[in-house]
Length: 224
Image (cartoon, rainbow, N blue to C red; front, side, top):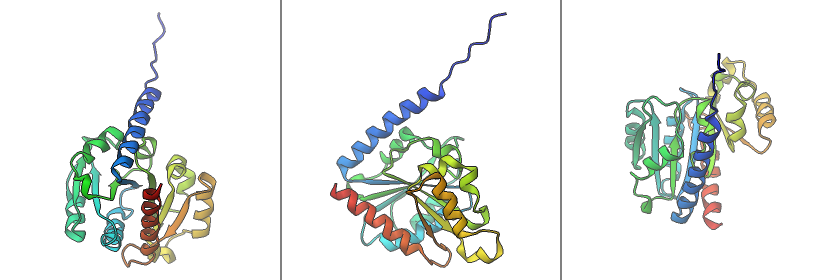
């Protein structure tokens, strides 16, 4: 019996996506639009963090948001109502991540001439979104205290590709076996250059630090 032929398509898919992502980054640079890819597991507090952050920055930057979910427009509506900035919903059709081409489709529906910063809230997932370059300038992720400080050990790629790790829900630190110093050490194992910013999106504590980082990022990028 002939052997089953195995075709490795993963590499070619990633290669094509990387080319699309590089092209998208170049195009956005020419337009002066900074794209941030924000990732996390479901329930980490991405949307609440975004609302707090945007309200701190919207007088300094022209901001738009793309919300990615398998279904519903709950988050896009919530962002628009709470911040007043343009917000669109991207339905992935069951896919657990966004790639560069899908991100481009979303950007095509924004008035980029009126935008300095686009924040992409990726699908809630610690695996697939980390594998695909969206064309963003920077990747950030939110790790919530209830998830545990060992997540950088269990999901290495996510923490390797992220430039900033926001540790959310610090108000419940006394109730969980979560050590912030141990978390920082685990993040450094995956990415020594990653910044760790503890926050509580519910109360607003620490969110200014994340907003300051993002504002500085956009400002420095525009000068290059």
